[in-house]
Image 1 (cartoon, rainbow, N blue to C red):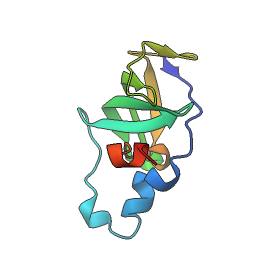
Image 2 (image 1 turned 120 degrees about the vertical axis):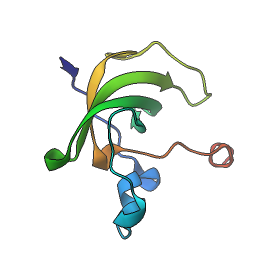
Image 3 (image 1 turned 60 degrees about the vertical axis):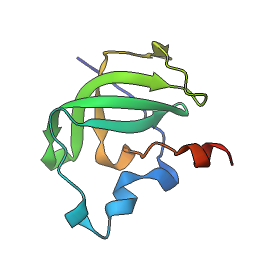
Length: 103
């Protein structure tokens, strides 16, 4: 069973926005890939087990929940480590670099 998550909007860190004009540099998502997204202003890492191209949707297991200070959590709201989630491509996000955190 998949945990239904209302992902945060990735904003300026959107993977889709970066590659919208250059699909050639964006590799197809597949099993074993680790993707990042935002949930309740935390970084969530998902290890992909399946990708549904028709839906532009990755299905995988939550392998990390990281707060703004870099601390790893076991649970955030209803989301816990090892939960299975669906992550739409438009909710994927790059992780902020340390320089971004200092602003």
